[in-house]
Image (tube, rainbow, N blue to C red; front, side, top):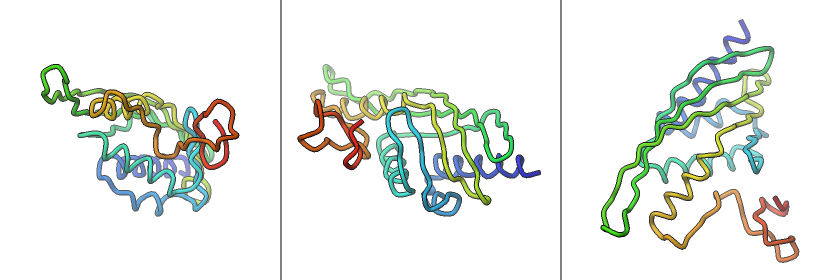
Length: 168
């Protein structure tokens, strides 16, 4: 059945990325114009998504994804995702490393087109906060945006973050 095939495709996609650190799967299972919709930004194209994945994989000391329930209808697959993550933080008062294990849950909705993932919607915004916690543990004065965010040109109101020339 097409729905079952689509669900298997999506499960393979996530497991290969997060559990096997296989970024090549992104090229294999997504369309060229793949779009990822996050809470505050859209990642347009495979390369932007790869950049974010590389940063997560490099920032966390451990990431493991489990696929929960999946349901599919026509060309869409809804997946319940559970991440087991770990951060190596620094207790600055004692100058020692602390390992923090943090479970996260989220939902993805993936649209399949001709046997490939065309578009994904994620409700996993806490991962962005964790990225900043990792950065803050190294330098308490530093708050970073995910690499897809850039400072807007000077004429952008309020110095808000943006992607390319589009202010958020």
